[in-house]
Amino acid sequence: MRLRDLLDESAVKLGLESLDKEECFEEMIDLLVRNGRVTDRERVLEAIREREIQQTTGIGKGIAVPHGKLTSIDGLVAALGMSAEGIEFDSSDGKPVHLVFLLLGRVGEPGPHLQALAEIGRLLETPGFYKRMIAARTSQEVLDILDDEE
Image 1 (cartoon, rainbow, N blue to C red):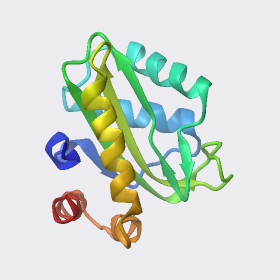
Image 2: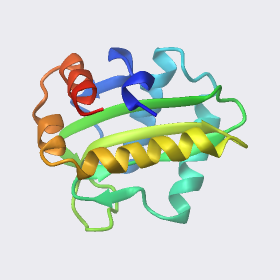
Image 3: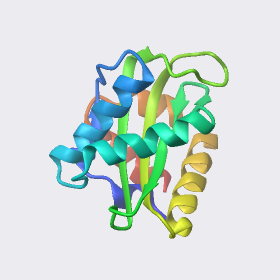
């Protein structure tokens, strides 16, 4: 599973404007609506919120991985966003989030969803990956970093 294969420039946003996780969910989902990967905005938002109620997806160290499953999603859909200011996300370490991976999977197909979560975990353990991502200045540079690491 390569995250890079799920992303193009239209699914990457540098300069997220969100101040909290609710705004972040909406901003990231709107990105996917604009690029045509999501059509049922409200259902996607509901799925993300339902997952977040179980446990925060702010995993610490400036990173969040909000995710959800829907019947209306075809395969696996991803978006990536970054915030220089940081987003209040109720993270496990209490720190703001700067790097957000949003994943949407299809109900009943856990394999791709779990593989993507595992790949995100692997990348985040790669020395220097987080710093390189945060320092990126363009969406293409972000995609190039993913290409290099995967």
